Length: 531
Image (tube, rainbow, N blue to C red; front, side, top):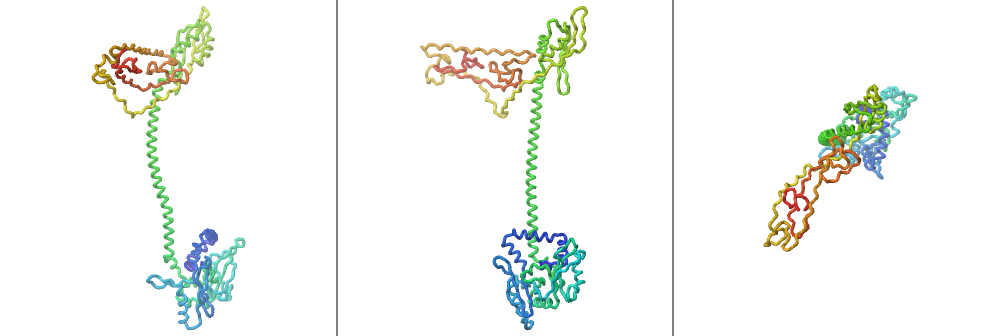
């Protein structure tokens, strides 16, 4: 503490006073105590050891030199030697230099660096007391003490070196407690002169014993004897500061640079993903549009009953004494929905009963007369004008489209069947060829003729305005194939199955072998034979 006070007497003192006034000093002391408990022992001891300086204690007959050392892993101050002060000045100076040689720092090829040391004043050579002052003089309490120094001490201000520090504040009474230490110049000046003759650079004159000299807050060294630039010009100060600045800069810049690269990679990946998503969305929209176009006609066809079904249902609903003079089906669009109405006009014996008949039907809803009935004169009949809406039907379950590989290679083209070879497969060469592809050997009974496959009859086509019946083959289906499985009765929206080319006809059958499985089918290209 005393060394730092000496390093920056004017600026440092003002900063420290402001820090104490704001409470930063107490916070810093608490924080350093907490960090000191967490720091390993070796770095903590090295840090404390670095702050310690040699200490000179002057008495009447000799001066004692204290040096920092380490005992049991803890930094301590030990007595190094004593320097006699009795004799001529040359002998005293030589004895002092000889005693300080072990503590002198030498540089390679450079002169010795002066020893920086403290001077510790014994209690008999100084005056120390606590003084209570109003808080109003806190900013300039040293000047206030200088004016009233003759009231607090038995000496005049010109005869003393003094220093003071605030040790307590009473916010209730608005007072401050100041620790004042003063020493006569007649005691301090000879000690400073003797230390300078030994080549010692006095860092501070402290009113503390040698064991606590490094932690003293008071420095009685005159202001003109203090140097304020050496601490800022030493490399021991700037090298750690530069290393801390570089480490801090690296800790801030390197993560930012890594995050920048990561953000750029994410941006490229997001752009690629966005492009693929746009292509996928375009394909989806195109597929939805094509599916909608494909199902439009089927939806219109299966949304309402066909005209033939409506005529059939009306014919069954109307009684035998009713005939129609007008039958009309009208389709109207209401927004995105389509409505189909039935308009009938005719004569009947009881017009009021027709509305109930239409309401009970499964094809019509909201039946109501469009105008008043007219009584036929003479006769029991009535002229009616009736309207009803056709009920919408549930669309058939759509079938999934067959997924085929568009990149699959097409099957190779089939060549026409060649005429049967003169020598059947499996017969030894040199034998006469048989009379036909399946001619029996000489002397053998001819084989029975193969039964002809029954020709598949074409399935009947459904009516033009009616839905295909259950079990009827779908348009484009192979005749004779079983119908596709259906979840519910009624028409279904189907997709034409892919074209499957017929298989190539089998070659000639060797004598004595069973006929192939498709021998009974009619050949498609004339290569086989008819039974």
